[in-house]
Length: 389
Image 1: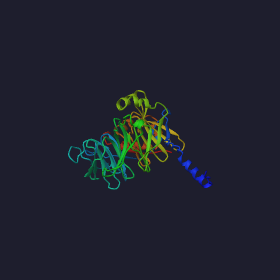
Image 2: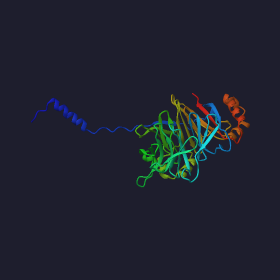
Image 3: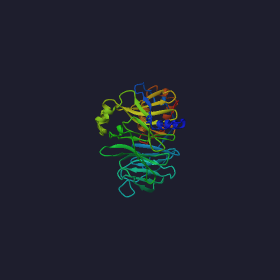
Image 4: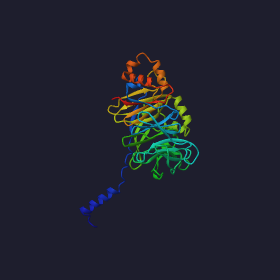
């Protein structure tokens, strides 16, 4: 029998070690963010939000806005998606022009649903759901080009910091509908292919709202009725980063199975049973701002990162707080931008509670100033807030 030397025994040991099955790496667990829905809400929005400035949007026959679906900023220029087009205003609210032509011609859009700003070219990209096409316009409103990505059923899209387009879409492997994201370049050429959300949530067929929040150089994605906020990594993967959990009455997996794909019935069920549902998630350097509905009630919680302290604000049009009608909320760098409807402001200012001026302090004088400068049927006023420390 051949004697095994010390060197050969070492080799044998290494071979045995490397032949053993390696332990599976644990999937990264997302950080849980608990949203407290039962804490006493603050009385006024301005208890937690400081008014930095306000921007009355010019009102004329060409600039009259309808419902505002999205607001984005570039070098303080304001871009507002309303009435299926993009309205452009200066940093002071002066109307510049409207981008996008509706119609059924070759360079016209039928049902635009979302837009993005292209940093390098200064173009505006608008997605048409009916034509399944991306339309590029210059700042003066002229058509630049169009393309059709190699997917359909796009719900919304965003321009990432890496220069790609990210789409939220539905794909159908076999007979099962699942929701995913998909990346393309400026010409519509595929970058990543489908990046599916977790099958146990996306496979139920719910996607009536989707969102691509940003924070610094991080790009997030999430879908309605899925409590996970995913970060899109540099190699185009979905990294589960945050898990939003409400302290009571969360929608369960059995609810999703029961109403598979029937969003309308599930929403009615959620409202009747006072279930909580995430509306928007935004991250700032010192806090998270999370908006949600409980039944039909609209709420926003500010959760501070350093000590997990949080406050709850109930946002309602009938509030005596003159800022109670500031909806929806959008993000611009480290600030929150609210849409203040003039007719609601004037109604609330005419019949305020006796202690409103004292409670709102300097913000009340700001509101009085806004009230004196606008008419009830004017375009909305953008109110720029900063979260108080």
